Length: 141
Image (cartoon, rainbow, N blue to C red; front, side):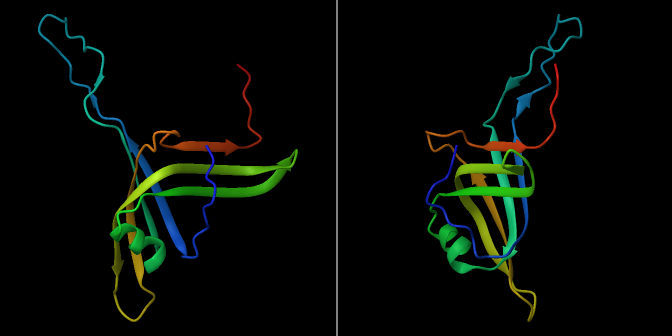
């Protein structure tokens, strides 16, 4: 999955968190099962959510949130070159996210901060999330 036509935010982003949940029924004991639990089954919709902590920027986050416009999100951490023209890389791509909350927090005369919650959705073409890691680690099986 790649994102084309995107622009890097000009907002200073201070932190990001991304979490996933895959709800499962894990209490499937029944009479006559000799105390054994049945296979866990999915019992709700899996979700990928996250939060961005940033300085307030009306156009990049708040306007997108208030217009309920889906957008894409790509987060890359790039390190030193490790050979073959490749660098260490940790990359997360979410092709379609919707901001669920984007409220500025005014606490005084300091720079206004905001916390932006988002949820990833399917764009019906790409996977909901892609995580890519490039390192020198290898394993022999």
